[in-house]
Length: 197
Image (cartoon, rainbow, N blue to C red; front, side, top):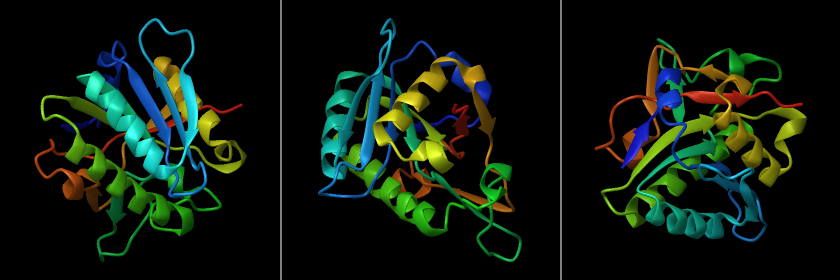
């Protein structure tokens, strides 16, 4: 079951769990997905660069072994609308120039990829497993090397002060889980923005 982590305080309680970070891509032929997994006691995450279908397979295999895991996905996991029903930024992290809104250009493509990715995971995983879902957000020059992005996200969760944490906000918010898993607890995943050097 997917459980959105909607507050940073909840994230601190989850630090003991294994974590998997994915810089989601949407290609069946190129290795557009970065994948990084770290269990307690590991000095550094295991990283891979995978195609979209291979990323689903690798993730399902890992999540089937771990009954609880923190899952960080670098793709929009919520949608925001203003009072007139128009798409809008979910917070300052999307509003800085150039705008990186969830519904523009690559953001829209990754939002769609995340829906199908999480749907595939939900269909393949045992109901007794729990994935604590967090959205990763990496923009600009730091976002090009997919396995490095996944590794950065994984490390940032290990040191919660190494990231900014934003709760999506708008007149109307819709979580990706509303489409993927209607039985999931309510709330939008918090957005983790790692400090990238």
